[in-house]
Image (cartoon, one colour):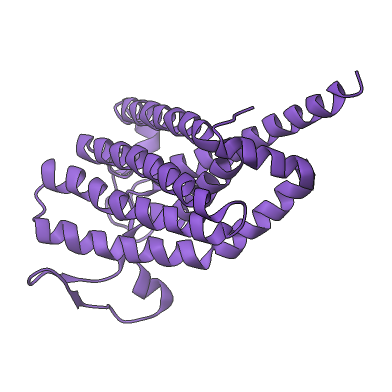
Length: 267
């Protein structure tokens, strides 16, 4: 009976840990998808002039990014942590679950935007503070609705990126062992986001939209530079997370859990 209690305690902690990590992962992935409709200027936000970078032909590009990229790095970090402690199966479970929730959210949002607006709601919110005519129902629909191409592109890129991240992470772990967390975490993110950054744009704006391939490549490069830079800059946060989790599980238990994860162990 004495030998069973520690195992039971460890299993409970692992489940609690997976629930917390899954909540962080799902929340940030869902928020990134919903907030991504806004395009912001990184230069203007930081007080710099436009970059005016010429890439792939005559297409001139500034650092204009979707608002969703602000919190995507949290998804990257959480993916690596789940991979470290729960292996491929853990990442697959939460990735598929998150994709289903994102798809469900898009359907719900689409349905809500089609509801007939109350007349008093339209009147209360029009005109705007400057006295201009303002249709809040139209604005609500424009902000929350996303096209089929964006939805398909986003979900496809998300799943491909997650699976690539898992494969590269586990492949690097065979060579690094339990050390060099920075190498397998950053390496897997750089590879997965190289594909993710271009797949989402190609499907959403080239296949379903009217972008040229030059635009897809140019915007993809800018997005990848941003994601790659943040993946490197946020590496210390990964070590902080590992430190806290190892304290929570206990050093010996944490080593046991990560070894099981490396060998496809889960719960």
